[in-house]
Length: 352
Image 1 (cartoon, rainbow, N blue to C red):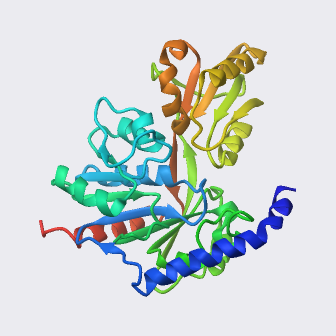
Image 2 (cartoon, helix red, strand yellow):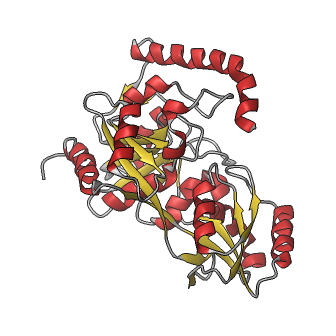
């Protein structure tokens, strides 16, 4: 129903798509300038508006690299209440840098987490303030062409491949499909764990990667849920009554996880990057009270948890649990991906 309705916006999509195509051509012909840095910069992004797993992929890269290199991340700080360049410190809040950078900051205290709308300006500032940095990960920057990253990683949801999608507002693409050719690595995310070689081959044929492009396939793995404030862990079981609270672009995998691991659950869904207010807290508590199970919890995502932390006085003793998420590479290709990323970094660093 919704997709059929969105087809009504095709004329707008054609106009928007033409504007994006022209903009890309201007960059391709060097009429609009892209800045390059003789420094290892990895870009993580997609062609769609969200829901492909950019945040967990950035976290995957941080985990992969942080014990071997001095890593920094740079995000624009979507929906933050501040502007300009900033580096997170012990006093930083999500309102100052955005929910995803705040999530990185809390999970990886030894990593430099920076924000700045104009990445071409923010990168030199970051390197000036943190000169020991050896690699920068640009979060959600694939469509922003002012900076030409050395390694572009583009994600696409297996259930909604960019090859089948339409430009906004008729579809979810914010960039034209041909922009996929700029990617060095394409990762098909949120695949079913049992994806077989025949299905992989079919998707590869549809994507039709260019010479030199690598394609990988990942699935989602959810970790052990933990209390937002006490960090006490809990194993979700069918006997739990669950209220799912989430404001993410694509909750489908999380809903599938709960369908598999819980008998039933209720859900309060909010827009992506939703900033929770006191009225939302009231709604959550009221909905929670309606659940009849003896053992009942509220479950939320790590992104939403960052935005709920400000309610610690009201929620400290409330059964509010967070479910972590990670990418898992299929077809035993994790080592191949690791080697490709680390080889790129090593090629830019002095010989050790």
